[in-house]
Amino acid sequence: MKNVAMGIVIKEDQVLLVNRRLPPKLWSPPGGFADDDELPEQTVQREVWEETGIRCKVLKKIHEFVSYQAQISVYVCEYISGELRCSFESIDVDWFPLDNLPDPISPDSSIFQKAFAVLK
Image 1 (cartoon, one colour):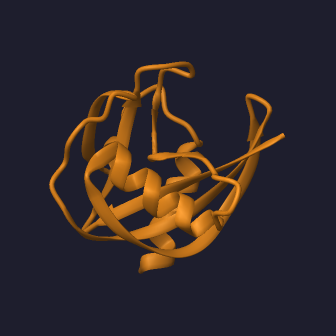
Image 2 (image 1 turned 90 degrees about the vertical axis):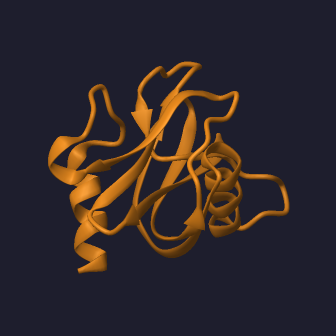
């Protein structure tokens, strides 16, 4: 099973999401497969940057789940800097308020609520 790490990046009262070009075609936090010599937190920082142009600080692991034969770790992150840009992996990238998340989305909206609670 492959290891995946994703980061729920929060800026003020909004969360950073990417609309994935490849399956599963849905909205999700930026993330991806860990390189062999990489810590999950490093994976999150690299993937957030590559997929969105945003720099973030990884704060805490808040969730784990299995999907598409991958072990996925979810981290809450704080926005540091950067301007949004799409990568070849996505068709859109944007900031969303917690009470207006797009559909379909993964992980479940309760995980996003948990991420916001960590920062409060």
